[in-house]
Length: 116
Image (cartoon, rainbow, N blue to C red; front, side, top):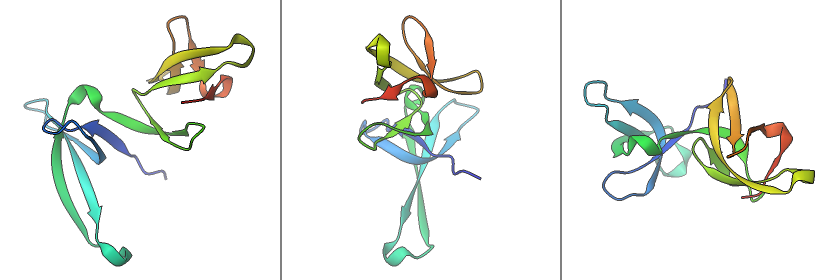
């Protein structure tokens, strides 16, 4: 089973926070539980709930760009569509999978190469 990774921008500092998502149903606020590992690789964790901007929350797609950077839902990417040239797109979850949404159409991950 794969690990579900989520990120969001913190409300107070505007930096990306990675971890597990918690949504407060009564207020709609979102929090990321940032799990910090202790030294020497031991299995002890300290959990810290950091409030994030709900519109910035995105799940890791298990895709990486040409530089090896992880791609998350909501990322803006530049695609190489081979014979069609380059196009900018947003990563969204639709039709049961992650796709690249462009102004003209939607491309699956098999139809393009992510450049950045």
